Length: 325
Image 1 (tube, rainbow, N blue to C red):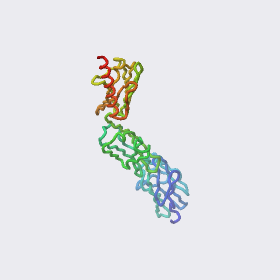
Image 2 (tube, rainbow, N blue to C red; image 1 turned 45 degrees about the vertical axis):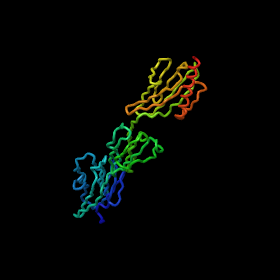
Image 3 (cartoon, helix red, strand yellow; image 1 turned 90 degrees about the vertical axis):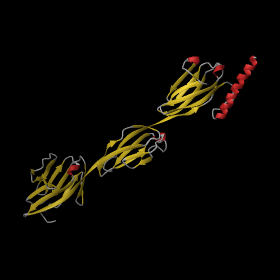
Image 4 (cartoon, helix red, strand yellow; image 1 turned 60 degrees about the horizontal axis):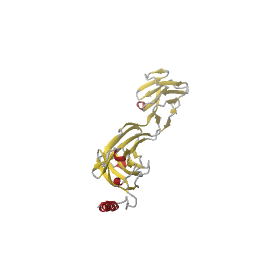
């Protein structure tokens, strides 16, 4: 480049120049520096065809644009809080010996990733189809990734479910409930991360109901545990009769997934088969539980053992009836 020209358009501080391309992060300030010599008679900085500064005279109405230096060796301006609208070509124009010359650089503004719209927390019934949305902005355009954080199926934080703005789940299961994390990444700054909670409703499932033994005069406790969303409501029956709390020396307590039927002073008439019923808005289920006395055959693991315990109970009752005669 001939002597007297604007030999180089430079950027300092948060900017770097490479092959006429300048990169800047949004909201940071940038310094444009043009190196000149004593033969330069006129000098100006332009953005596209708009003059920002000509000599010491400010032409731009943008108060972010200021002149920093106008000497025999350097002509520099600064723009505070660079925005994406500042992106584009910048020209240092000089005149020497009545021959205008220019040097141009192109500013590319980088914007950190930002999630601008994401689905709200949602509650659905098991088997439904669910679509989660996560829209992000940034320059360069960020990569959006969804992952499931609950760890019920996969190790926590390990299961990448989707690399897209939209996560579609067909026939959602109870294991797929929990938190879903959306992450927007473009390497300009730290990722922007947001979470959505998905609650999956499902009907009750009794996971624990065991036969229990107790001696006459002692305390006996029957337990019934049921998984359900929303939480199940419990009822207890003996034969076809619904039991009420506080009547006939029994107490019913239900909290969360567990319901207990407590006999404070077990009598002979308390022995027998009881039914626990768990209900929520999606359905109900039940399980039979036996309260038995010492020496009775029992095994809470299968139906056959329950039948055997019932037969034993009936045999005992029949024997007592015969003795009465």
